[in-house]
Length: 514
Image (cartoon, rainbow, N blue to C red; front, top):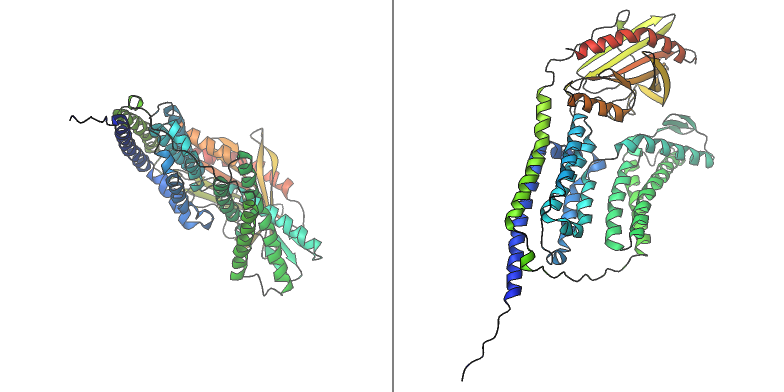
């Protein structure tokens, strides 16, 4: 008796083998492109890690990559049903992103260069695996942007709002308050709103965790958006309450509570309790997860050739490597000689007293003079071959630092003045020393002959100057005057500035030509 033959399921086996082969080549090509990009932009990546290490505000950056990888791992079953398919339409986007990185590095804008690096890595994933695959892991990819140290620009605004709320709340509690800038006095002592009181670290941590919570617990886009907005607003208001309660506890306990180390401990405990309350409230509207049926693998005839993964990886490597090479070429043409600032005629070298705080300038000039019983000063901080540790526009460069032990800021502002026949907006500041001396100061930037007080414009001008092969020489110019008997020194300072500025401009131009 003859035995009947049974047909074997050949197609599914071929599908599985073809899919496995595509994944092996796609995975290898992706690892190559990611490693290549990190190698080409190693200095930018190392700068991010260095900020995570030294700043508690951005310490959460260490957990971003592990969380992103976990988010991908938890949907691995769904991903297994798709086949990677490389795409080329993202290559122009990678070119634009590389240009943004170059401009960020030339302008020493860390947030731009570091965000561009993350964007390059994300675009590399989309390019190698394809848009269909990238859509499945869109959130884990976008979550990587939380690794970028970003948000310090909000610190002055947050500090001002914290001081505003604290003073209003204290007065509403029947406690008299006298305010000078970010410093205020109550009957039991003096208080200051410093950088740690801004609440920026609470805001960034809450925003990251709140975004993750919204993704994991909600399906509707509007619910996610509302909760993320809630996660951004709650820490700001909570920080205001925290600051007010710290001052109130200190006042009621005769400065025995909420000062020193317990000041910080109380702050984190209060923030933790507020976050737990926020997540508890958010969980009440949690949406149940929907079971996702795994996709059916595509037919063998539709699988991309394995060589296509390596062609696209080569294109990504070429584009990614072009911008660091362009940066190296521009830097090689930078002036190697240190700048020299010639003293301004009629002014004497200044020692002691008020000195604006600018970190690591390539050259600086500080002079003073006495005119008609008034004391005037000039300070110039000149920068060349700028880098992260030495740059003109930085949060560390200011007229008066909050942690200054001698000078106390009485407030900042701006005003319009005339320089070289053109109206220019300058930054203004007032400060008082421990001995009661008060000064008013005006500050602006000089970048390749252009005057501005805008941080963003100054950085853009520095980048543009380097692209034109003119280097990155730039300077901060500060004119200041001492106030006497409560008299406003602005009018006298304006006359002094108009008289001295032509010589200062000539000094800057000669330094830039050397």
